Amino acid sequence: MLKSLALVILVSGIVACQSKPADKAAATLEQTAKPAVSTGIAPADTAAIMRRKQIPVLCYHQIRDWRSTDSKSAKDDIVQIAAFKEHIKMLADQGYHSILPDQLYDYLTTGAPLPSKPIMFTFDDTDLDQFTIAAPELKKYNFKAVYFIMTVSIGRPHYMTKAQIKQLSDEGNIIGSHTWDHHPFTKLSGKDWEIQLDKPTKKLEEITGKPIKYFAYPFGLWNKEGLPELHKRGFKAAFQLSTKRYPTDPLMTIRRIIDSGHWNSKNLLSNVQRDF
Image 1 (cartoon, one colour):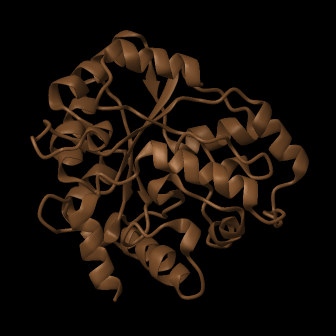
Image 2 (cartoon, rainbow, N blue to C red; image 1 turned 90 degrees about the vertical axis):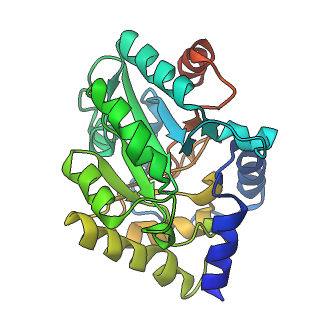
């Protein structure tokens, strides 16, 4: 049953984590969720985290040229190759410096210093073009990134192999978890946690030889009831999309914005400066 679901997800659009549906659904979840459960973070600590200036975190999916079959909404998640190169060059020319999740975590929890104009690049879903196109382009400017891996796709056509994931890790990028088959986090329960969190984490640790400490929610969707499952598994932080952070647990609701396929470099810079 799960394998069938995975195939459906892979075929139907791992152009997946679109921001607009996620925003609407996450907002609904915030309004209807039950009272918060304990997360193990002292209120004073969360208050301090919420007071710190947010750092821009960009989210990418596919880096390829548009096809005639791509819908307008799908194009939000598909940055064309020339545009991606222009966006990355612009950020470098503007003096931005990439940071990785441990740096962001230390800044948020202790106030540790960051380089001037910090920014984080994240990639979801394991698409091959992230390895063949995005990573080399980032490398030109000494930028590092975070790759959130959906493990069901590893080694399949148009997706990264184990060797490519390990290479990214060995080159100083961070590998994070994005579940097994992109199942919505808000619908997980019971044995789902083992399938969608435990097994993917173990597989990625075997591939990279490093602990997996960071998580990205499929579709950007999260709920309060699921956050303790991330804490008990030792995740340090988790990344959503553009809805507001949860004040009781801001480390598990770090905001990202999608670098839209419809944006030019000026649009991207404006959104980075405005939204963070």
